[in-house]
Image 1 (tube, helix red, strand yellow):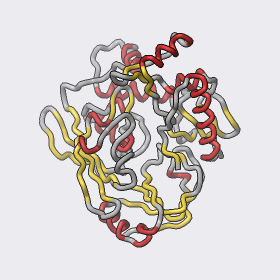
Image 2 (cartoon, helix red, strand yellow):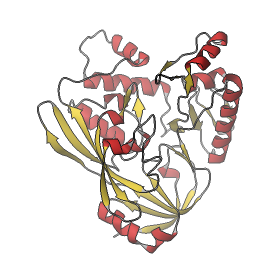
Image 3 (cartoon, one colour):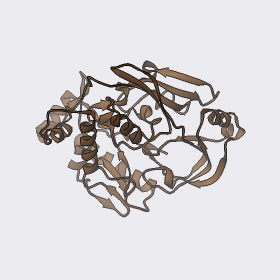
Image 4 (cartoon, helix red, strand yellow):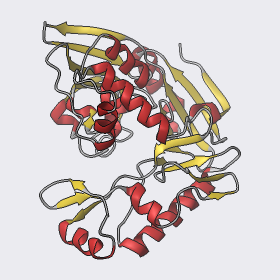
Length: 340
């Protein structure tokens, strides 16, 4: 039986700590509950917002509709051999807790994605990635519930249309599918580690130990992230606010004339990516504070709410950053965070 609440504060449900309210609010713990909600008259008449961990969202105003908080839990082994294991995780499970569960079992494939906030269900929407690894690398299927019919559909990997911080669930299927669970295949032995990312490689080299393991990579990633990124439980934030922009090789060459040390890394045959944090820092935003909001002093890619800041203030700051980067480098920054 579903329970609809009214005029609920969303402050506990977003990592920016923005205090806005939802006109209607409902928690969903099972697929039958979700199907019951979809069949309800309230669901059919109100604007809707699907909310997981709230780690990739910026609220700029109250939500005058129905917020559906997904709390589907469970971790289940579907199949395994001596080499690999196929595991299904409920959409409402904490992503980091799930990663730690896998790391503790020495299952490889997502150790580079340690300490990313949010839920497992949100991971494929954003195609979360870090330190050279994306969740698309290990996903087998994504199970979802049709937002109009309540029917369950299993999406094969190709149907998910994964791209850089993107998927079908963020574009073509946006607001059309409730993700209920994700199935991944992880390695149990002969792991294929990715440690080419500079900071991660350097951190592992400091250990003076050639025996790289799933746990060592996870520990290194956690240490790096904790040194650079603020804990949202102490300082409100949504991690990286902007995507790393892709520019042409010709554009990069033009930038290098004025900025010989501009960092870049391959994107595809036509483009390279330039770190958005570097661009923002070069424009003088790193560590800048405006009343209760600002740019984090250790990572220019992270916008923060020091307490009492509003979503409108953070959005205005983001727009000012975009304008300055465009004027200085002729590069367009695109928000990674969903703005409501």
